[in-house]
Structure formats: structure tokens, C-alpha cells
Length: 166
Figure 1 (tube, rainbow, N blue to C red):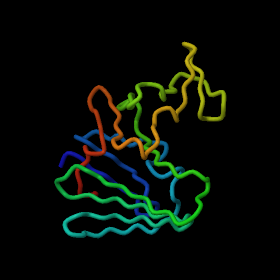
Figure 2 (cartoon, rainbow, N blue to C red):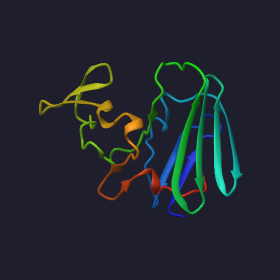
Figure 3 (tube, helix red, strand yellow):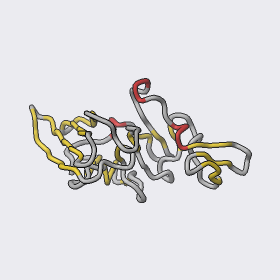
């Protein structure tokens, strides 16, 4: 197995993304919806040869699904929502190690290392005069069928992680 995905049994956050022995998950916050679903009921089952992980949030009207098949490097994700969430945005945040994966689909427009925040924690001014924002790195999810990031060693897409979930 060349990849491994670890999901927290208490919150449903992705806590580890390993590929070819390299850990890509960030260290300060987990990969999750917004700031996380909080306390959740996390269950797993096998359905017709597929592994299905269900994360039902205890505090938000959200259920997150991860579906994968052993030997197939694709991880499918789905989100089912039945009401308002707090905060009022429902975004998937992949919090990865920028040293290993410094370049996103849109280049370095979201790289804020060495820059100074001037509008909350979202907008930054860099010494070369550029303005950067962590939100510049994404398209509307409905318009962006494939997400990827790249580094000198790897170019990762959702298809690079094999299952089973470990």
C-alpha cells in the first residue's frame, strides 16, 4: 500500500494523509469541514466491496461521508446537510504541510509565509508588494472537479491515496 488515510474516531477529521511514506497532513489543524464538525459519531462499514466511513456531527446538522475501495486510489467524499451550520459557511479545508506541497492549482497566490496579515487572518501583504490571501487558492467546488497540490517530490490529487483507511 502506497498511501494511508486516518480519520479521527471522535470528530471525523482527517488526521493523517500519507503517500509513499511522506506525511502531508498539517500539524496545527486537521483537514475537515470549516473548523471541524466537533464531537461526532464515526462509523465504518463495507458495502459491496467499498469502505464507507460515516461521520455524523453531534453539534451540527451535517453528515460527512468518505467512500473508497481497497486497491483503488480514489477517495470519494460527500456532505449531507439538513440545516444551518455555525459559522454559516460549509467549506472543506485541506490543511496540508506547505513545506512538502507549496504550490496549489493557482500557483503560489495562497502562500503567505513571510507576509504580514493586515485584514484579520485572511489577507496578507508581502515584502515584494504582492497581496495574498489563503482563499485565493480555490475555485467554487462545483466548478472544480479535481483538486491538487504539488511539491518537489510529489504532485497529489485525491486519486493518490489508497485505502483501506488505517
